[in-house]
Length: 51
Image (cartoon, rainbow, N blue to C red; front, side, top):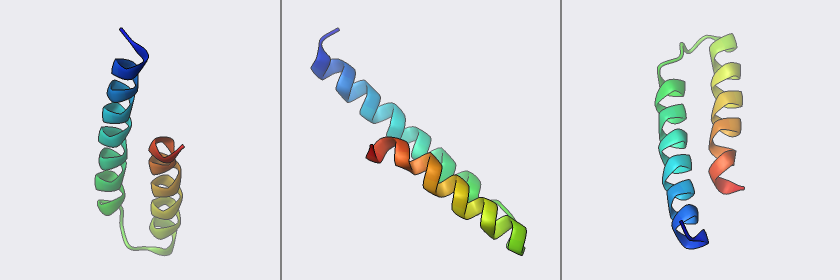
């Protein structure tokens, strides 16, 4: 596997992961605690692809 192929696969995996995290966060309750967890999990789960 070349570096380019690895990069494309990594990008695809991190995008799928971020989408899964966003879907999970939308299912959390709208309570104050739920909003805190939603914010934290969304920020940390989507930062993988950004970095």
